Amino acid sequence: MSPDVDIFDEQSPWFKTWRSPAALVEGDALSVTQSLPDSSIDMVMTSPPYWKQRQYDGGGIGQEKTPDQYLRSLLDVFAQVQRVLRSTGSFWLNVGDTYVKKSLQGIPWRLAIAMMDEQGWILRNDVVWSKLKGGGAVRDRLRGTHEMLFHFTKKPQYYFDSSSIRNKPRAAKVVNGAVVSATGVSGVRYRRRIELSTDLNDAEKQRAMEALDAVLAQVAAGELSDFRMVIRGSGQRTTHSDKAAVSGRAKQLRDEGFYFLKYHPDGAMPSDVWEIVPEDTHKRDASHYAAYPLELCMTPIAATCPPGGIVLDPFVGTGTTVLAAVQQGRRAIGVDTAPSYIQLAKDRVLRG
Image (cartoon, rainbow, N blue to C red; front, side, top):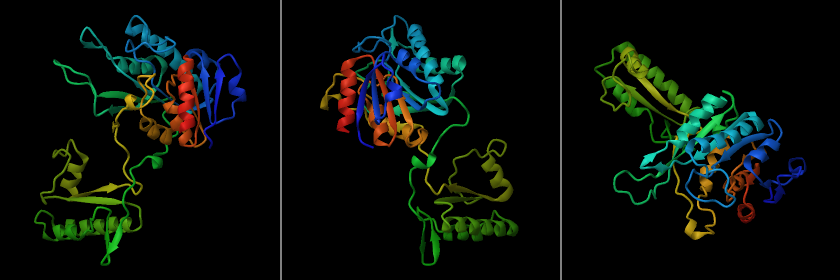
């Protein structure tokens, strides 16, 4: 998909005529989203101006007198986002907090709770974006080096392509006739532990051997990438409670004498803590101070927007969301009130 970018004015009937991979619309986020048809967007990802953090070109949201007024402004926009988002769509929201009289205002969570309580959004994940640096010079509190990235959906069932974001495992192999998992687990040591166990009776040992053979067959067939076998009384380290009333694995260990940890053949799902260094504004045009990094957008777009689908960012700023969407074969709409940001976003998308 070529990186062609069209610039539109919010007053024009741009949505009906837009054909390029990316559309940048100069206008107010609320007005532009109000003009979009129902259920026309596959995914939304945005980072609105933070409250009282900076004076952005174009003013608008973020300059309200109180946090409550700021939240109301955003909720008005997000009500329209909910209307234009498809029933299978996702809304990813990055929003920062701020201090007033040395007290954090709790803005991200106040906003998220209002979205759930007042608008019926379903919160699927609260991702912690660990920025690894920054936080300013502080003396009487810890440095703040994280922000929240919320994943909302309209419905319990929604588009989610887990295969596109899993951490790909190494493949199993056969060594000297024995199946060896991706991390070198062959079953030989587990057989030995079962045979030498003084904690398992003969019947339990037989069942453990049969279960081990079945798991090794799954590894050989590519149905599992790896596994671990925990055997009662073997002294192996576990991560669960030892109380059977609390832990299903502890109960299985007590009743059957063993259990398995099985790993998906396509790899593990990413966690909800993402370590991503912010963009270095000193190495580029820093006319916009709060551009979030391209990497932050990649997983949400890959997982929750179908190929060829439309991604909307109603506060596009420097165009990070649009650039990430186009790079991954999606179409994208970016909205901003400031002509300077619209041009900055266009230049960035065209540069790739």
